[in-house]
Image 1 (cartoon, rainbow, N blue to C red):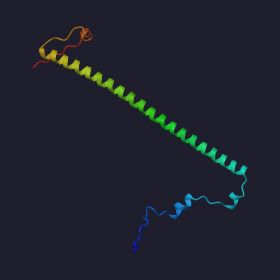
Image 2 (image 1 turned 120 degrees about the horizontal axis):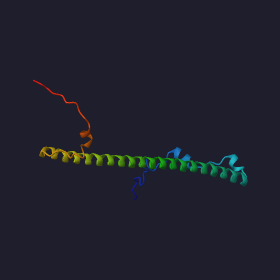
Image 3 (image 1 turned 90 degrees about the vertical axis):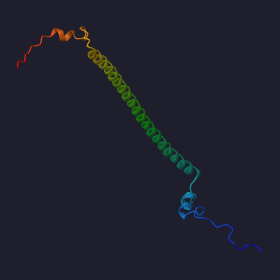
Image 4 (image 1 turned 90 degrees about the horizontal axis):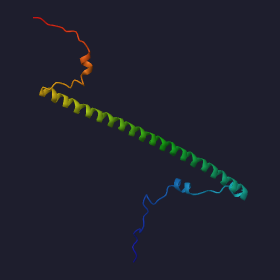
Length: 130
């Protein structure tokens, strides 16, 4: 005797909603049945034109986005170059300052060539008396 159990119960994933069925169907109206081949060709060509326009707009939009991304990358690269210059400059300045501080701590006099601008100026002398 054969089993009376249901062999295949459709789940919610296998059941199509009526809206999905309606979207997939293309209804034929009286107007569409009475069209001539020329009218059908013309209507299809106008859809192609609007589709071409939509595709063209989408290509332009993506081109603008690509231009913005490219400009952003260029600005980022320029900023990185400026930052690298600043870091290198500060590193060199720190090396020079450390070198000058070591020379000061050892008791060496600064190079007269480097301080020639200060030697030419005449400063007023002040004295403090106690």
